[in-house]
Image (tube, rainbow, N blue to C red; front, side, top):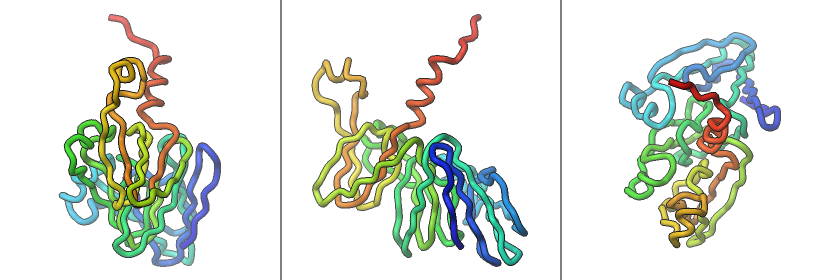
Length: 227
């Protein structure tokens, strides 16, 4: 199996499958395909797993695409302008992702929901209590809005982030919430009441364009119905 990522802000992902190889994605995630490919839609690992994924921003059903010929190609596209990031995972290795970040993965990868254990992080962390967790072995591809900046945090090193900009991080990173200090900063700073604190060790991926920010900006130009 090999893959190619094309484009800049509206990227496409081409995955080339050899006979017997397969990938899975949320329902409706495929854009186009070439060659003999069998499709199988199911809840994948049972109804409870499917319900958990739906809480984490994915569809209840997932579709598996398997190459039934010598070779085939299947193309996937993100739901919003941004970047497609490949995540290569060893057996048992995981990443924690924002809701709806999962795009497609090899059939050996596990996709499940992830609960934030701390009450403050769940209430004020920008994405709620439920996130996505992908676990290897295998390669997964996630979609991140806007451009991506990756940082490696050393043990005890902390970075403060507007919660909407957190796209993905390693499980070794500690995620918490810190209230912005100062009444004027809270009322007029424009950054909200809370900031996220990410403390190493581990790698984090930040996005330049949270979808909530984009939606808020576009809403200013949407016509308002009277009456």
